[in-house]
Length: 268
Image (cartoon, rainbow, N blue to C red; front, side, top):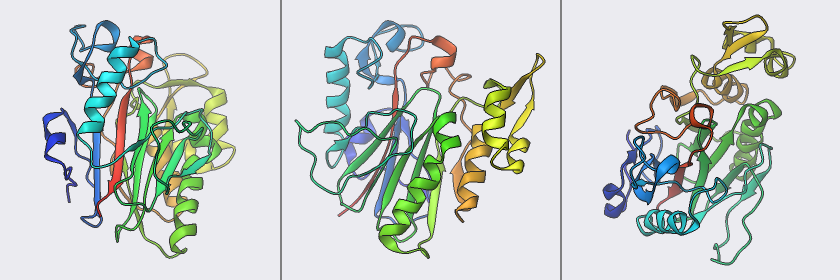
Protein backbone atom coordinates (compact mmCIF):
# COMPACT_ATOMS: atom_id res chain seq x y z
CA UNK A 1 0.00 0.00 0.00
CA UNK A 2 1.10 3.57 -0.56
CA UNK A 3 1.10 5.55 2.65
CA UNK A 4 0.04 8.96 1.47
CA UNK A 5 0.35 11.84 3.92
CA UNK A 6 -2.76 12.50 6.02
CA UNK A 7 -2.39 16.28 5.88
CA UNK A 8 -3.60 17.92 2.65
CA UNK A 9 -0.97 20.66 3.01
CA UNK A 10 1.79 18.10 2.52
CA UNK A 11 0.49 17.51 -0.98
CA UNK A 12 1.61 21.05 -1.82
CA UNK A 13 5.26 20.08 -1.27
CA UNK A 14 7.06 18.05 -3.94
CA UNK A 15 8.28 14.75 -2.55
CA UNK A 16 8.02 10.98 -2.43
CA UNK A 17 5.38 8.80 -0.75
CA UNK A 18 7.12 5.66 0.56
CA UNK A 19 5.34 2.33 0.28
CA UNK A 20 5.21 0.19 3.42
CA UNK A 21 2.98 -2.87 3.72
CA UNK A 22 1.66 -1.86 7.13
CA UNK A 23 -1.37 -0.43 8.94
CA UNK A 24 -3.04 2.73 7.64
CA UNK A 25 -2.00 4.41 10.91
CA UNK A 26 1.48 4.81 9.46
CA UNK A 27 2.29 7.80 7.26
CA UNK A 28 5.58 8.68 5.58
CA UNK A 29 7.03 11.33 3.28
CA UNK A 30 10.41 12.13 1.75
CA UNK A 31 11.32 15.65 0.68
CA UNK A 32 13.26 16.37 -2.49
CA UNK A 33 15.53 19.33 -3.28
CA UNK A 34 12.75 21.69 -4.41
CA UNK A 35 9.84 23.30 -2.61
CA UNK A 36 11.63 25.95 -0.53
CA UNK A 37 13.61 29.17 -0.92
CA UNK A 38 17.28 28.11 -0.76
CA UNK A 39 19.46 29.20 -3.68
CA UNK A 40 22.75 28.35 -5.38
CA UNK A 41 24.28 25.07 -4.22
CA UNK A 42 21.25 24.59 -1.97
CA UNK A 43 18.68 25.50 -4.60
CA UNK A 44 17.35 23.61 -7.59
CA UNK A 45 19.79 21.84 -9.91
CA UNK A 46 20.11 25.08 -11.92
CA UNK A 47 20.73 27.11 -8.75
CA UNK A 48 17.33 28.80 -8.72
CA UNK A 49 16.00 29.84 -5.30
CA UNK A 50 13.46 27.06 -4.83
CA UNK A 51 15.60 24.65 -2.81
CA UNK A 52 14.18 22.88 0.23
CA UNK A 53 17.46 22.44 2.07
CA UNK A 54 16.70 21.37 5.64
CA UNK A 55 20.26 21.15 6.95
CA UNK A 56 21.39 23.86 9.35
CA UNK A 57 25.05 22.76 9.27
CA UNK A 58 25.88 22.86 5.55
CA UNK A 59 26.56 26.57 4.97
CA UNK A 60 23.18 27.68 3.67
CA UNK A 61 21.59 31.00 4.66
CA UNK A 62 20.13 30.32 8.15
CA UNK A 63 17.02 32.36 7.34
CA UNK A 64 16.35 30.20 4.29
CA UNK A 65 16.73 27.01 6.31
CA UNK A 66 14.35 28.33 8.98
CA UNK A 67 11.77 29.12 6.32
CA UNK A 68 12.22 25.72 4.66
CA UNK A 69 11.78 23.92 7.97
CA UNK A 70 8.77 26.07 8.81
CA UNK A 71 7.12 25.17 5.50
CA UNK A 72 7.67 21.48 6.15
CA UNK A 73 6.49 21.69 9.75
CA UNK A 74 3.33 23.56 8.75
CA UNK A 75 2.40 20.70 6.43
CA UNK A 76 2.80 17.98 9.07
CA UNK A 77 0.36 16.81 11.77
CA UNK A 78 2.80 17.14 14.66
CA UNK A 79 6.26 18.31 15.76
CA UNK A 80 9.34 17.10 13.94
CA UNK A 81 11.98 15.30 16.01
CA UNK A 82 15.25 16.36 14.40
CA UNK A 83 18.48 14.55 15.30
CA UNK A 84 22.13 15.53 15.50
CA UNK A 85 23.44 12.69 13.35
CA UNK A 86 27.00 11.44 13.97
CA UNK A 87 27.20 8.12 12.04
CA UNK A 88 26.70 6.11 15.22
CA UNK A 89 24.14 3.59 16.48
CA UNK A 90 22.37 5.54 19.23
CA UNK A 91 18.57 5.18 19.08
CA UNK A 92 16.50 8.07 20.45
CA UNK A 93 13.13 7.25 22.05
CA UNK A 94 10.85 10.10 21.00
CA UNK A 95 7.83 9.41 23.17
CA UNK A 96 7.52 12.73 24.95
CA UNK A 97 6.30 16.02 23.55
CA UNK A 98 9.01 17.97 21.71
CA UNK A 99 9.57 21.50 22.98
CA UNK A 100 10.63 24.18 20.51
CA UNK A 101 13.55 24.96 22.83
CA UNK A 102 14.59 21.37 23.59
CA UNK A 103 18.13 20.25 22.81
CA UNK A 104 18.41 18.23 19.62
CA UNK A 105 19.29 14.66 20.63
CA UNK A 106 22.52 13.17 19.33
CA UNK A 107 21.50 9.92 17.63
CA UNK A 108 21.30 8.26 14.24
CA UNK A 109 17.91 6.67 14.70
CA UNK A 110 14.66 7.40 16.48
CA UNK A 111 11.57 5.40 17.37
CA UNK A 112 8.20 6.39 18.76
CA UNK A 113 4.81 5.01 19.76
CA UNK A 114 3.48 8.54 20.24
CA UNK A 115 0.81 9.43 17.69
CA UNK A 116 1.53 12.65 15.81
CA UNK A 117 5.24 12.65 16.63
CA UNK A 118 7.12 13.00 13.35
CA UNK A 119 10.53 11.35 13.11
CA UNK A 120 13.05 12.81 10.65
CA UNK A 121 16.32 11.67 9.13
CA UNK A 122 18.39 14.04 6.98
CA UNK A 123 20.52 12.71 4.12
CA UNK A 124 22.35 13.68 0.95
CA UNK A 125 23.83 10.27 -0.05
CA UNK A 126 23.57 8.21 3.15
CA UNK A 127 20.70 5.74 3.37
CA UNK A 128 17.46 6.84 5.06
CA UNK A 129 15.56 3.80 6.34
CA UNK A 130 11.97 3.95 7.59
CA UNK A 131 10.48 1.20 9.76
CA UNK A 132 7.05 0.32 11.15
CA UNK A 133 5.40 -2.70 12.68
CA UNK A 134 2.66 -4.12 10.50
CA UNK A 135 -0.04 -3.30 13.08
CA UNK A 136 0.92 0.37 13.21
CA UNK A 137 1.93 0.60 16.87
CA UNK A 138 5.48 1.92 16.47
CA UNK A 139 7.62 3.61 13.81
CA UNK A 140 11.33 4.18 13.40
CA UNK A 141 13.68 6.24 11.23
CA UNK A 142 17.34 5.37 10.64
CA UNK A 143 20.32 7.30 9.25
CA UNK A 144 22.54 4.60 7.73
CA UNK A 145 25.75 5.85 6.21
CA UNK A 146 28.29 3.10 5.66
CA UNK A 147 29.89 3.62 9.07
CA UNK A 148 26.63 3.41 10.98
CA UNK A 149 25.48 0.54 8.80
CA UNK A 150 28.64 -1.43 9.55
CA UNK A 151 28.42 -0.58 13.25
CA UNK A 152 24.87 -1.94 13.50
CA UNK A 153 22.50 1.03 13.52
CA UNK A 154 19.77 -0.97 11.75
CA UNK A 155 20.02 -3.86 14.18
CA UNK A 156 20.00 -1.46 17.13
CA UNK A 157 16.82 0.19 15.88
CA UNK A 158 15.00 -3.06 15.15
CA UNK A 159 15.99 -4.37 18.59
CA UNK A 160 14.76 -1.18 20.26
CA UNK A 161 11.41 -1.41 18.48
CA UNK A 162 10.94 -5.07 19.40
CA UNK A 163 11.92 -4.33 22.99
CA UNK A 164 8.81 -2.16 23.14
CA UNK A 165 6.47 -4.60 21.37
CA UNK A 166 7.87 -8.07 21.91
CA UNK A 167 10.26 -10.24 19.92
CA UNK A 168 7.49 -11.56 17.68
CA UNK A 169 6.59 -8.10 16.34
CA UNK A 170 6.57 -8.12 12.53
CA UNK A 171 8.30 -5.11 10.99
CA UNK A 172 8.41 -3.67 7.50
CA UNK A 173 11.03 -1.31 6.06
CA UNK A 174 11.42 1.20 3.25
CA UNK A 175 14.85 2.12 1.84
CA UNK A 176 15.05 5.70 0.62
CA UNK A 177 17.25 7.64 -1.83
CA UNK A 178 20.95 6.82 -1.42
CA UNK A 179 24.17 6.93 -3.38
CA UNK A 180 23.63 3.99 -5.74
CA UNK A 181 25.79 0.93 -6.41
CA UNK A 182 27.09 2.37 -9.69
CA UNK A 183 28.22 5.58 -7.96
CA UNK A 184 29.60 4.61 -4.54
CA UNK A 185 33.29 3.79 -4.95
CA UNK A 186 35.00 2.65 -1.74
CA UNK A 187 38.31 1.26 -0.60
CA UNK A 188 39.31 -2.09 0.85
CA UNK A 189 38.74 -0.76 4.38
CA UNK A 190 35.03 -0.28 3.75
CA UNK A 191 34.63 -3.71 2.21
CA UNK A 192 36.51 -5.29 5.12
CA UNK A 193 34.33 -3.47 7.66
CA UNK A 194 31.36 -5.48 6.36
CA UNK A 195 32.90 -8.73 5.14
CA UNK A 196 34.85 -9.31 8.36
CA UNK A 197 31.48 -9.51 10.10
CA UNK A 198 29.50 -11.37 7.44
CA UNK A 199 30.93 -13.20 4.45
CA UNK A 200 27.61 -12.74 2.62
CA UNK A 201 28.37 -9.02 2.46
CA UNK A 202 30.92 -9.69 -0.30
CA UNK A 203 27.99 -9.97 -2.73
CA UNK A 204 27.35 -6.24 -2.21
CA UNK A 205 30.77 -5.27 -3.61
CA UNK A 206 31.99 -5.33 -7.19
CA UNK A 207 35.52 -4.52 -8.44
CA UNK A 208 35.93 -0.84 -9.23
CA UNK A 209 37.79 0.90 -12.05
CA UNK A 210 41.09 0.89 -10.18
CA UNK A 211 42.88 -1.76 -8.16
CA UNK A 212 41.81 -1.84 -4.52
CA UNK A 213 38.57 0.02 -5.19
CA UNK A 214 35.05 -1.38 -5.17
CA UNK A 215 31.50 -0.38 -6.04
CA UNK A 216 29.43 -0.74 -2.86
CA UNK A 217 25.70 -1.44 -2.80
CA UNK A 218 24.29 0.12 0.37
CA UNK A 219 20.82 -1.15 -0.47
CA UNK A 220 22.06 -4.75 -0.55
CA UNK A 221 24.03 -4.28 2.67
CA UNK A 222 20.98 -2.83 4.42
CA UNK A 223 18.77 -5.71 3.26
CA UNK A 224 21.31 -8.19 4.68
CA UNK A 225 21.25 -6.38 8.03
CA UNK A 226 17.45 -6.32 8.05
CA UNK A 227 17.27 -10.01 7.17
CA UNK A 228 19.63 -10.82 10.04
CA UNK A 229 16.87 -9.53 12.33
CA UNK A 230 14.09 -11.27 10.46
CA UNK A 231 12.87 -8.19 8.59
CA UNK A 232 12.18 -9.36 5.05
CA UNK A 233 9.49 -6.86 4.05
CA UNK A 234 11.67 -4.13 2.58
CA UNK A 235 10.42 -1.80 -0.13
CA UNK A 236 12.17 0.98 -2.00
CA UNK A 237 15.82 0.58 -2.86
CA UNK A 238 15.81 1.90 -6.41
CA UNK A 239 16.77 5.59 -6.18
CA UNK A 240 20.27 7.04 -6.63
CA UNK A 241 20.97 10.50 -5.25
CA UNK A 242 24.08 11.00 -7.40
CA UNK A 243 22.39 10.23 -10.71
CA UNK A 244 19.25 12.27 -10.16
CA UNK A 245 20.37 15.91 -9.61
CA UNK A 246 16.95 17.33 -10.47
CA UNK A 247 15.39 15.68 -7.41
CA UNK A 248 18.15 14.93 -4.93
CA UNK A 249 21.00 16.64 -3.14
CA UNK A 250 24.23 14.62 -3.26
CA UNK A 251 27.35 15.35 -1.23
CA UNK A 252 29.46 12.94 -3.29
CA UNK A 253 28.40 14.65 -6.53
CA UNK A 254 28.43 18.31 -5.47
CA UNK A 255 30.29 18.46 -2.12
CA UNK A 256 28.60 21.73 -1.08
CA UNK A 257 24.91 20.85 -1.02
CA UNK A 258 21.71 20.62 1.01
CA UNK A 259 19.89 17.87 2.87
CA UNK A 260 16.60 16.07 2.27
CA UNK A 261 14.42 14.63 5.04
CA UNK A 262 12.76 11.23 5.30
CA UNK A 263 9.81 11.38 7.71
CA UNK A 264 7.50 8.87 9.36
CA UNK A 265 4.73 9.14 11.96
CA UNK A 266 1.63 7.51 13.41
CA UNK A 267 -1.91 8.82 13.14
CA UNK A 268 -4.02 9.15 16.29
